Length: 376
Image 1 (cartoon, one colour):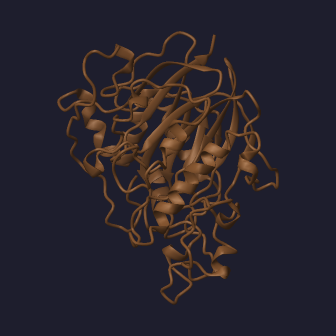
Image 2 (image 1 turned 90 degrees about the horizontal axis):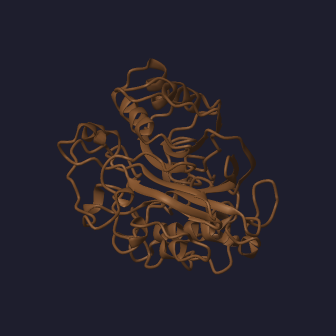
Image 3 (image 1 turned 60 degrees about the vertical axis):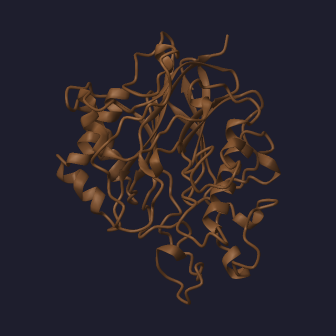
């Protein structure tokens, strides 16, 4: 979701078909429409910003408990239609007990709208910096309280959190929510904007950065996931959100480096990144388009052009919109790295008039999926 600031964020109820690519592309590579059946032996990785968030603490959880919520049903069917093996589900408000994720997993087991249910026996719901009070006046308004003074923008702890759901076992879980922004070499922190007191508590990650190894039938694949802050809702002359967004994306790239860029230390105190030669998939709503929008130039290109990136046609062509706001921006990514081969990819964006176009009001972001196999 591009906008995560205030109660005015509401799901758009209409959807205009975007003509993204010509008919010359192979059938599997068409990003507009419904996900195709996976090629034999393929694994489907997907990210989906489901927009299941509310400024009121516990509001989403109550909707899930009540059952039958219209938006939840659309989100559930969207996921079931795509049927990913591994899913990063973003903007699901997190409660301390993790009940919201438990209820979502239960809902996914029951087919919705004619789709087949899907079971995710393995899941993670990492603690998010959103809404966690920093105790410091970060926004300079003279008061050390409110969503802008949280470690990540949010009206309550767990606001805009994300989860990982997997059909396969998950291990070697690492989070980087405590890594301070000031500890990133060459960080884009605006000069003189934050006090020393603020920099002593302000993390780089607005939610968290997650690494988790998935024991897939094709071998281990490490998911690296995040949801960087949107590069808006600030003073363009200072661009503190744009700077933080770019450095959050940089951390995703540096975690692909066994050295972790020389600075990445996880919340357990372990330094370094991905093991040499390991397969990985970077996923999430990165709030950055390669060519348009308000993100800093080159912010997401750093990921798409990183060493070891596996070409994802046509998504790698950098023009496939994944969200309807901003005139259609590409902000959601599933990018494989290492010894993986892509067998399918797309954006779940059914055309107007198609039966599944009714799922559009679930969110103004679309589910993005990429199918991979072990490289020959």
